[in-house]
Amino acid sequence: MTFNDFNFNEGLAEGVRSMGYKTPTAIQQQAIPVIMQGKDVIACAQTGTGKTASYLLPVLNNIHHTDQTQISTLILGPTRELVQQIDQQVEGLAYFAGISSLAVFGGGDGIAYEQQRKGILNKVDILIATPGRLISFLTSGALKLDHLQYFVLDEADRMLDMGFYSDIMKIITYLPKKRQTLLFSATMPPKIRTLARSILHEPEQINIAISQPAQGILQQIYKVHDEQKTPLIATLLKSGQFASSIIFASTKEKVKALTKDLKAAGLNVDAFHSDIEQREREEILLHFKNRQLPVIIGTDALSRGIDVEGIDLVINYDVPGDPEDYIHRIGRTARAATTGTAITLVNERDQRRLANIQQLIDKQIEEVSLPPELGEAPKFKPHSNTRNKGRRPTGQNRNKGKKPNRPKPSGTK
Ligand code: AMP
Image (cartoon, rainbow, N blue to C red; front, top):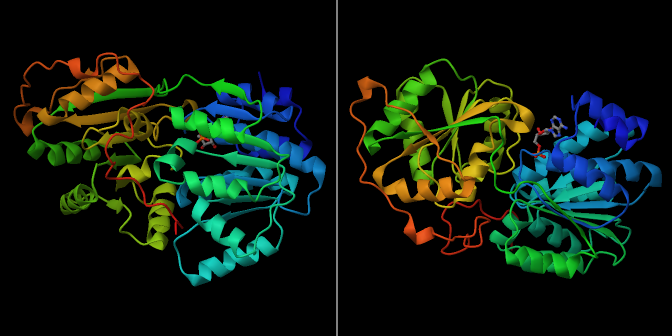
């Protein structure tokens, strides 16, 4: 199958070519024809699968024919980073089709709010928003969505995890009843099904091999003592094998400490977490994208939606507690059919977490020996994973206990 099979209009086809897309990904092959037929869709697909273009392309193709002077499309996403990235993909794909878009999100100052408000007045075709900021524009009367045709919820599970359920339901009350609604989610816990039942009309369901990391990722673990983690990471980064790397740690404190230690070891690294001002975060991401910064260190706030091509190494400083976060983290490498390496450092306490991940991905991750100069690796007691026998692999348990590292909802009131 090629993109020609979709018969996109010429402007959009040119946009697809200019983005360098040659073959539609699995989710694109399934979702694009269904969305082009005007059906509601509930799709289970993770970042890295090409899911953004799978809803953007059919919507962009249809918008072209309607010659809208009002906002025709609303895309909701959980974080400002995701919203900005969707906007960038729209800009790339829609460039030759002359379709306009605007991203609005919380945080920032009064000037940012005013700029976004003015942007809305200019009547864009596609509005991409975080829920909180959108609601403030809707309730203040600055924004009307009476002519909306397409409503997309991206990373719906993440939005619910972040407490946006009532915001989403409130937003729905501002939308016309007759519209096409597309819901994308990395996981399908029951609360997503409930949401889908209340906002979608006879949706077509699309499932893309849920919760499996991309094939091109080489996954490895090192068993380590805590004090061996930083020297091991420094050794890996200094090996010269990896041009662009992301390191994940579970807390801001660990991110800060690791950043300090690696800088002290002479490495060019920077930290990315919610204590850093938005402007600075954007600058760090920009430096990372344009390869001035080879290594970025962050919490799970980085693991969703950060759309940077050519990342060849992901390191997990610690093992994420939710196995699905592991998949999101390592999905930052090997995007859309390239290859990459994902290395996870496992101490004795994290063994059970590793077992849960291996159960979810249904595979034993290859163990690599520590370089001898870093000393002896720990010998773990044999581990049994009886607690999780029979656990459903799709994250039904993921909301037990509050997660410490979620990004703050932007723009919530
Ligand atoms: P997503 O899953 O939407 O986060 O997309 C992951 C990355 O794949 C983004 O950088 C897209 O620009 C890229 N991408 C999407 N579709 C394709 C395709 N058909 N071929 C190559 N790259 C793609």
